Length: 111
Length: 114
Image (cartoon, rainbow over all chains, first blue to last red; front, side, top):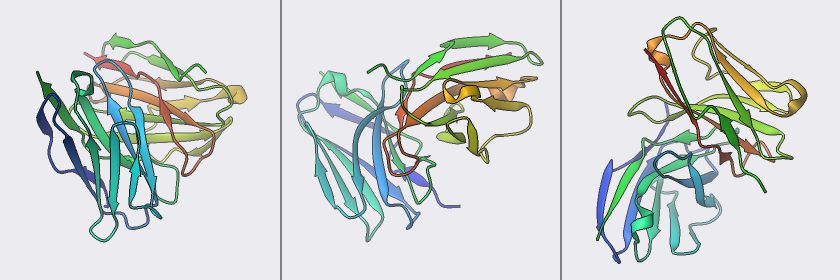
């Protein structure tokens, strides 16, 4: 079946550097995508979303890029901080309401 | 605005026992979802309520799982009898609209079946 997946399970980043987390999706019917951040002991927290009629959206220190041609989604975090250490999930929301998640990328920020 | 809350945060039970998880969605959110993450795997959809009605329960693993949302407010998810493979983290989420709207997640209930 179709699913959302992440390219790398782990990412180690130097504090202050930019982070890029990638995600590939295969459901061409998806029109809404979300990035969630999950810290230890907490549930997934909404970071940023993007709809299929856009290819870029910026938030505070985060940018999501959507490439529908190759079905690729990425999350860029500027000036990565220790508090950014967490598991990051991309999720797609096709025509229905079910979120389909990837396995997650664990980001570790090195001091 | 209070977020989605779940109770308990942790539950450890023995195989064959019954456990009931509770979720309180964000006030005003008609849509309530249950998801589950089994160790090392992705978060999987279980079911979706619109108010008190089950809209879709296609993700429920089997008939040992029963979800209810009487009155359209909080929801419970009962596992009876629990099996070892039911261990994982159970998340509840809620949203205003059913599609294309942000789903806000609770902290989850970590269930361990021994």
